[in-house]
Length: 168
Image (tube, rainbow, N blue to C red):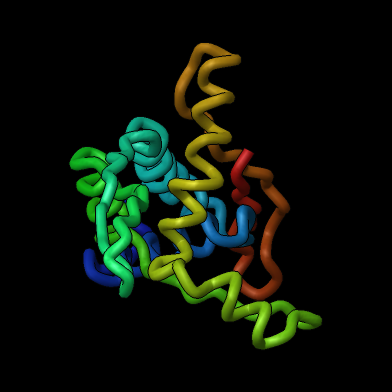
């Protein structure tokens, strides 16, 4: 059964969601060649969605009064409708990973760094990867091609072809 990975639909989709989340988070994973090929198109569609909508941001000004009655204006930035729809679509196709405290990072610094981040994987995809790939798209004049697959040879035990898939 080519393209089906020998699994039921639920199992196959769970594997793809998990591996897509890990690939976006870590930038590189090792898996079998068949899964890497299947994962490539899955991840490229998610990244394309992020690249096309990452800059759809709505700026609003909120006027509030402090204790003394003085008016204070603050600017807030929210996702526009296209970006919000894209974020929700990507969230439906990935698992949300939690931020991990660095080994030498203090708890106070970790909390300060992550206090505004509700969905770290979406934050990374839309705020780090999408602008990088959008700039690459401008320079090269082409979209897509965000992943690369290296073949490693056969796995010991069952002789399955191993591969590394990474973000370019």
